[in-house]
Image (cartoon, rainbow, N blue to C red; front, side, top):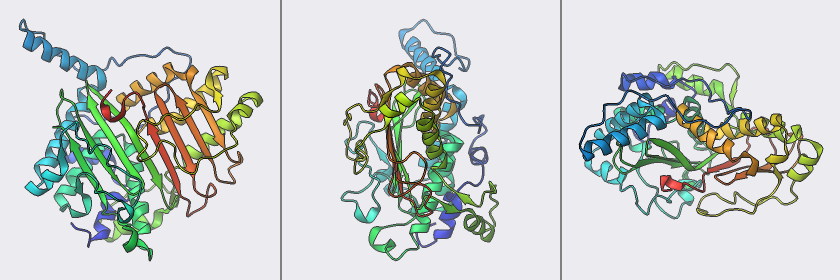
Length: 407
């Protein structure tokens, strides 16, 4: 498939379509993780480490085998064999379908200085080339293998978010400015850094307009920093997406809502949090100045904003849980076990985490909020009022202690 066949790409990527488990099932018989949302940890329990690991071979007497066993134990402790095996397998399957020229573009060293080459800008405005192979240039088989890979290495909610962003791009591609700005659902790129492996560090990057997902696998853990998630328009007609699937013989599992709104939950949870704070905590959270853009967005690696807002250590347990619920909407893009491990880390630093809010709290206008702790930065802003059908939203998720998996 190429960029001249936009509807087929929309069928594959407009999504809230075939469940991720079906995509994985086409490529591997390994167990598939649950599609249920990852719950934020309760503030009443102590952080835990995962005990859901697969069986390990006995350690051998030689130091070489002993070191390998230790690596395998780290892998299992981090994500469990059922999460790791299909990720590596699906990545290798996709790479194996690339021709020599595509492999040269898609495969880069783990420590490549091109890792920061991502942006939320559309292709027509970008002053550099994105990393990887362009999805609009993939064949049908390659595209199916790419989707199978993405479905294993992200949660179903993460895959839905990513594909909904690409679906929104398909809407923009029909505007009169599309050619000049490079708005096209084919203008997204997938790159690998290092060789997919159960023990050696590697990473992948998928992005284009309003999207830059950087996931790294090291010591048995998947981390996701930085990750830019945005969308325009903010509300997509579900019936139009259904029609594309029906026209091309696809079968889409509709949510029956009439529209798809990728950031509806984040906005609702943010409003619930700020309005649920005590009077004193709410006064401390409200800030008078709104940044023009995300302070830690594209091109801002290493930037740590000044702490602002209300400190969660002064909140009640219900308010703290509401903050964790909000954070989990970003962290929940990770596979379930890794998401739980990450939420445990964030919860352990909750007393040193701050929440800042700018804008009306009734959901009637433009808003900005920031969640910031020792190992967490989340920013979200709307360009225009909340709820507008042509809304334009930006967000960033970072772990400043482990950017690009290179802690």
